[in-house]
Image (tube, rainbow, N blue to C red; front, top):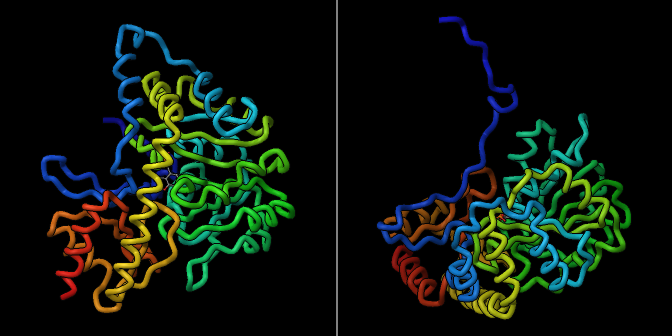
Length: 355
Ligand code: PMP
């Protein structure tokens, strides 16, 4: 046998890969509240559209630029068609941003804590990153981005896993002075934060990209479609580095149908936001500390029981929530908001285990 050299790139060999929320066997009937999936499911129109497109046309490649979907997104959000790009989940757009916009030697910054996939992508592309540590209240401070401005920055609004929301005004104040590219990830903004969206700012700021996803408010995690808004020079650059046929045909169909039933999305997001407020107030009554969340989840801790113990105890009752083992966030659990009945069940289980 010849001696094989090490094939894996050094930074990949060192890489801590992204850890998705655990995916239990559906036959185990676990109440899955660990990945911010939407319990209401997609609009019935999405299912109809998918059924009517399951035919022999699947032999053809999908539209490589998802043109019809881009046109639909542009129409619904009131932007020009060259200000939109779509991809295989907003995760893919995060990856595209690294390969399109970060030259060697540049640094990226994002808050701690935040969505861990930014760090994963930085590691994959071997881009050094800097954390902007949040204070005890976990609130994001946009001024921190200006202290040592880098070529690229991410901010999740609302943030994950905390759910805290920044105002559009504070994002704009930062953009006025920030010399790099600022990516505002609005994966969860439909659950009560929409008026703080940065989308209306794209015409004014050439260094702004806004990310959205069909996974959460449109309940299409399984279809993997994300989209982004920005000035045409940014979108054109991203178009050059995207994978050739990055969104499967049926996924494009599903996303268009979801936008056709925007009202359905709004009403499911509204129900989730109402139940989040109710659930949060019930948890507060029994002594939980909560951060003010505008996502479809709450991030909570209890003075009498460690977060990991709550997580384990709920799992024994077939309720799966998210526990993060990293520093600071390990004091908390993140619970996705399901239907009202599901949250009643979670509340009863929590009360039982604290009794
Ligand atoms: N941004 C944030 C803040 C998220 O929590 C997620 C989902 N885990 C994503 C982006 C990615 O969403 P998707 O790839 O499903 O569009």
